[in-house]
Image (cartoon, rainbow, N blue to C red; front, side, top):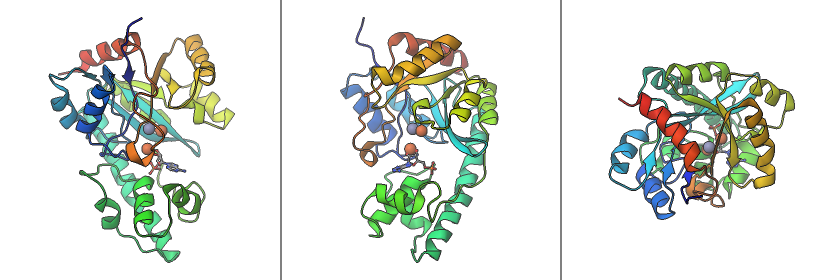
Length: 279
Ligand code: AMP
Ligand code: FE
Ligand code: FE
Ligand code: ZN
């Protein structure tokens, strides 16, 4: 046993985290992590600053992303790792997500307006520390709190933004299948994110039959027994087993960076895969 730990799931200010990529790297080093992957929602924007900042520092970084996708009507998160982050296929899918989010956010703001709540795009982006690449419901929730319409983020989701609530908009869909294909075209690995949170057994069954390379067996607050089910499934399928905290910073204060992690052995598989793609 050695003390190598790598957290493969966290978010920066490029999506809905509250630490910049550089702050995430500093925090990871302070916590004694030896490996990190920043998996922002639908953007690889963190990697230009993150790679240059990590150089010469005692931590290894591998490219990651958490793509939003849909299977029928279910919303599914797909983690991607070890691709070349500036691959045209990845950039093109990120761009499609940016457009998807623009129209969806506009629809949410229209719905809020009909409910007598006036929010602008400026209200939503104003609170962020750096240039936001991915604008999503958490940012709208934050603006609702700041403007005094609700008192907590949780309340914003419960009342307005959660699935099926009064200001919820689904937006267009990008399928799980095309997301896996994009990651594979960019020589990346496609991983089912937090299967623990998928409630529909039929959806889960269909996902397990798809062309994934692995699943996120170690996740956030889940303990050994709760992770066991996923580890067994992955072992049976000879899939990779990844893990991470899903750290978002202050926006999710009970989840700390490094609270879930993978060993050196797993990290090396992903890292070697990445080195084959690095320019
Ligand atoms: P979006 O990608 O815009 O659909 O927003 C989804 C993100 O919102 C998730 O990744 C979470 O970070 C956050 N989220 C979803 N549901 C809730 C909730 N009930 N309370 C707080 N944050 C949530
Ligand atoms: Fe998030
Ligand atoms: Fe997720
Ligand atoms: Zn996440």
